[in-house]
Image (cartoon, rainbow, N blue to C red; front, side, top):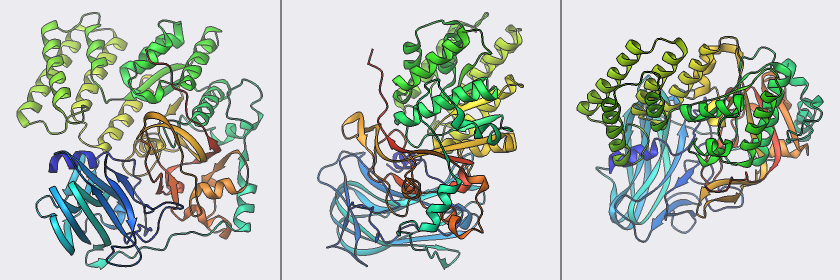
Length: 579
């Protein structure tokens, strides 16, 4: 059970490493605006009820209650937060809290603490050997850990494994014997001075629609992006129609006005490259090719419209735009690429590699990457991939075919070494860099989630910024209210978004009543009292493919992005019909 919990907690959400003393809501005293769940906490666990409780509490007004009447052997509920890694790196921490349990069976209630580094998980404790079960009154528990100096991210929280009910209250974090004193959250509305500053500094935009008419409103981007070679186009959720359409509009602008000739998406690399044959030469069915990129997130009318524009653009004989991808979460496409080489490796060798990867896929809880190969298994895979590489180097002489074949072997290595969420970002950055090196004179429009393009510790954007310097520029996206497509209680469907509330970045953005705008964060002064809120680490919407109860997690926008593109209202992306 400890291993399963560690793995799930390694990929629950796109948390953002925070740089200073920040509000964590450790005592659960601040509810999400209009709800009965706590601010700052990510809540997960199918079938588990999680809510603030004002009747059973150890301290203050609320405790966090977590419960489920019946639970299977691997079921658990969890709440999670993010601790500023810079404050704990190379130091000792003590994480304490009070827990009460009632009829907890088939598991335990406890706290958890996880430390990640660039190469994977550096430390983890979920109290699996000392958690509380059965019936217990308020009991103080603790986790103590030395935080590795190579840490890039810290997450922590509480969990209930099995059935029953647990209450959590008065959490505390001590660093080298000193208590972490969190500041109070901002809950007030923007001042008149702050709103006037924002109105003065935004760049209003005409529309999100790539309608082919005037791009005069985007003209300021010519100067803002003049020195960029890679532009990261984010998204705050994987399912917003307005954001997808706006990104399509920006991709068109980048191609037509700024000579960006490569497009790269957060999709598995070999499968994404197959769309390049379509946008260049019209080969294949674009709908089938989009479906071939696995994730439902890209199987939308909005993405199809962009792909069809690329094909139309290239078909007119204009300077072409190419279609690529940089993710590495699946292996079948790379095996297929190797089997189609002009001189493919022996069938028996590929079949052996495929059968062992299939076994891993079927027997891995996550069906995505190596989460715990034995040394013997790792050695066997290393030998098989070494044989593939040797065959390619000895039998493929054409430079571009050889480079592509070796890259597909590398993708298989990455898949097998995908041991943590952070590793995926490391490898996506590596793959995007490979693409750039194969096209030394090209400029790249990069499409991915905000949580990947951002330039903070441990994300793809950080490594791209290290590689490209100021030539890597990011545009983070945000919206105030509306809907988006996600996976939730109703399956894959449209869900109402949590509206922004006082104290969030988006609440500032919506208050000036400008429906769509850009804000250049690089030009914001820390010295101007009217713009200091930008540097306050406020809650910011951070959802991925899942619908979650609390969509706002504290963020450091000024560190994460160069520009913000705000859309007041979102609607759900339009999914393509099933096959």
